[in-house]
Length: 436
Image (cartoon, rainbow, N blue to C red):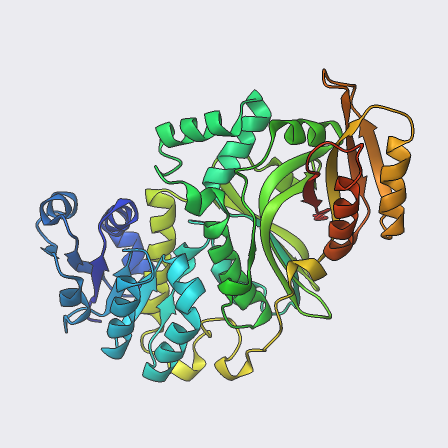
């Protein structure tokens, strides 16, 4: 059979890794795909740098449109990133009848519904395993491996930068600012780390997984985001004392009223497998009604781990090139006409357990007032510890609650902060059991 020709857009870390894997494992890939797969053209702003990385057998150009318009290219691999020029190029490739492989989670989270509809109309495939959790094959798992299950919830540590920061804060007792600087020095965090530490990256990935799990359109604009930049080392230490680890968690859950879609720092019992995922590693915990909970763990970023997922998609597309488009695995797991318009629940309607840290004047009756206000809002206490007085005459009270709606905890916090015996704002973190 004739070789499949690849056009690569973006020869950065992942693009270079993709070229390396295609060349190094060419024989194995051919045996698996059933035909030779060749990288014939690449687009990159720095042409000289890309030529040095790819070698003489690959034509390098500085205009990505030349790749998507090249009649000899069968599969376009988009590794540019962002959601502006990348969107235009992907839609143009689809219009030209080319299959697309992408690692672009932002593009899909914001525009995936439109992109998949266009691909369906043209009878081409858009593969995106590398868009979520790097080399962990979670997209294929959700779309194919768990097809017999009604997915109940997904919880993921899906941003390595934030997980590295939280791990270092716990292990070394260092401040957020100090660990962030270390992460930047090591190359784990960008010069502007906002995208990672404020939850946007995790939110994009979670949006994609929710669409696959529940058969709903991409709805990133409805995802609740709360990052780790305001976390205090005291809360990480107190959580440890109570038997919990703090992780930036992406959580999506199907409920009777709609779908939860939220990213935020979360207390997880230290005995859970996912609570022990450290450093820059990623993990996704999926609960299916038939299989129960399963955990998928591995490298969530990096040249070769992400390239592994990109090349796996190329092989999958190659295998399916001769199949009838109507009989291919749907892009979002469910048939295109079977997507459901389930509402995304506002965070105020979500039910969770909570960690509260309260600075209060160390005198008789203060703790009784706090617990009274919690009770008035229907909130029961699971655990409580009081730390000794500090120099200004205040003490810190740490409370773990049982599950309650967020709107109730917000009312209680407002009432507690209004007490003249309470100093400053109440620190609130959510908690999840995540039985695995």
